[in-house]
Length: 123
Image (tube, rainbow, N blue to C red):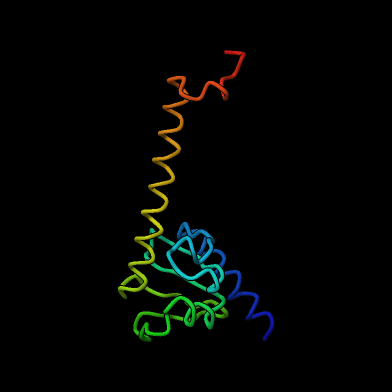
C-alpha cells in the first residue's frame, strides 16, 4: 500500500515537471495568503493544492464543482474551465508580466544612466 502511495507521489511530481508547474503562494494567484501555497500550470490550465481545505475555505474554491476538480493521491487539481480558477491563473499571468515589464524598464533605466548610484565603476 505504501509503495502505491509513493508511486502516485512520483507520478504527480513528474507531471508537475512536465507541465511546467510552479509552486507559489496563494497571494501570487490573487487569493488570501491563508490559503497557503499552490502549484500553477499556465501551460495545462490548472491550479493544484495539497492543502485543499485551506484553499477551499480561504481561496473560495469550495464552490468549484466536481466536474472541474480531480484528486490524485494527496493533490487536488482544479481546472481553468471554472471561472474562479481561470481568474486566478489570469491574475498570476498578469502579475508575472508586470514583474517582467518592471525588470525590463529598470534595465533600460540603468543602461541610460538613470541610476548613477548603481553604476559599475569598471564600465
